[in-house]
Amino acid sequence: MEQIATQLLTVIGAADEYRRAVALAVGVGTSEAAALGELRHRGPLSPSALAKRLGLASASITSLLDRLELAGMVARQPHPTDRRSLFVMLTERGRAAADAIFGMFATDVASAVLDAQPEHVAEFTLVLRRIGETLRARAADPAGMSSVLAVRTSDGGTPGRADLTTDSAAK
Image 1 (cartoon, rainbow, N blue to C red):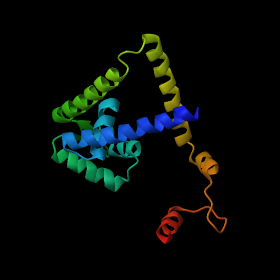
Image 2 (spheres, helix red, strand yellow):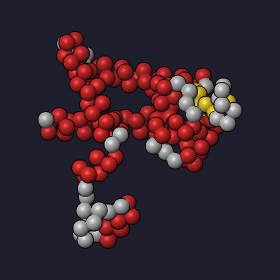
Image 3 (cartoon, rainbow, N blue to C red):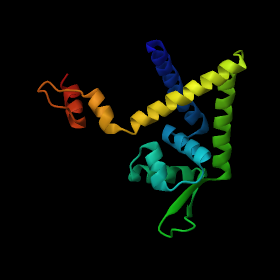
Image 4 (tube, rainbow, N blue to C red):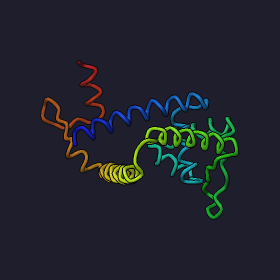
């Protein structure tokens, strides 16, 4: 099982490199490319929902949306039932970019499994789904994650972000 985890980390690293290269090719940052993907796959979202999906603060999502709007890739529209809220949606240009990104990704994945037997592809797809579900469940339980990871400082306490930063700077 450790071999699978190690290989999956390799795939995650390759996916990170891929995401950076795609963003550069499209002329946006990686966060902007991720936002295009979220909007493509989930449809229009409120800025707060998009911020949550991307793990960004509200001020950061506002700046990100300003950049994407300036690039003509997204538009902010009034929410149809809540006058206080907005929806963010892809424009034609944003949809074309997101579709091209996902299309290239799907082609690249397909070429990697081209010679595999269909039953192996089906089984592998199921395993990937289960891995995704397991990782999402762990991510949704920050208290459980913290207890498993329980990093300790030299004085026996559990460090916060500032402690880790300070410890790193001191070394």
